[in-house]
Structure formats: structure tokens, C-alpha cells
Image (cartoon, rainbow, N blue to C red; front, side, top):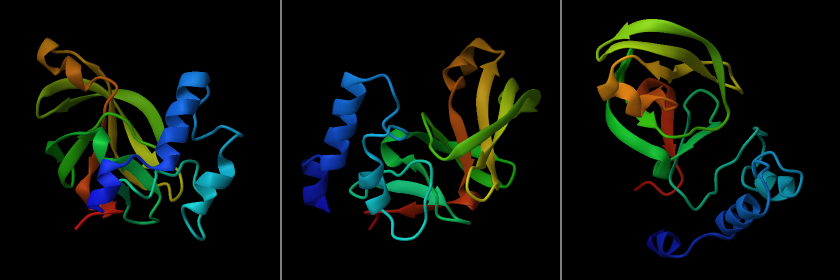
Length: 154
């Protein structure tokens, strides 16, 4: 797996090429569905993360949720214990935004759920009312109780 970290996988190169040549999302493009389906054996999700990268998946249905490279912080608290802050996620739906008083103050947040099994995973920060918390806007919290590490963890 150390060698895999040095060389960028074929899939990643195709995604980068696709991003630079088109504005369409590579996960949803018509050009690469066969490559993405090959990455898992029996389940079909909206998006697949490359097997050569460390990823986080839904603990309930194993749908891919986030690439380890998108992890911002492990120092968050969810309603059911520890949680991680991610820059971006996949296979996640978003509910309506509502104002909540969290440990760090008032935020507008929207619950996020697994698109495959519909389990609530955490929330998305839509708006932070305090200037010191603005970095969270548009970011995602996923509670550890709802995710598992996949691909390349030792």
C-alpha cells in the first residue's frame, strides 16, 4: 500500500482529467460508470471512491462517504460521541437547514443522511453566526458511530 501512495491511481488521473475538461461531476458523468462499478462487487451507489485511497464508509451499508484526504479535523463532538469534520462527502443527502445552538455557538445546520440506507450520519454547516466559526460553512460532520474505515488502513 505504500507504493500506492506514491503513484496516483488510474482512476484519480481520469477524474482529474475529467474535472479539467468538463464542468460535470466525474461521479455522475456518463463517461466513467463502468470504471466506478468495477470497484465494488455487488452494491451500486451514486459515487465510488478509488480503492487505492483510504476512505470512510457508512457502517450500516458500506456506502462510500469520504476520502481521507478530505478530513479536516478529528476534534469534533456529535450527538452520539466523537465526530470528524470533512471538506466534502459523497452518497449523502441533506435535509432542511435549521438554527441550532452547538458547543461552539449558534449555527444554521442541515442533517445529512446516507443516500443508500437513509441513516442520519451528522450534519452540514450551512451558516456560522460567529466570525471565528466561518471556516465550518459548507463543511460536513460525520459521527464515528456511523462510519467505518475502508481501503488501505493498517
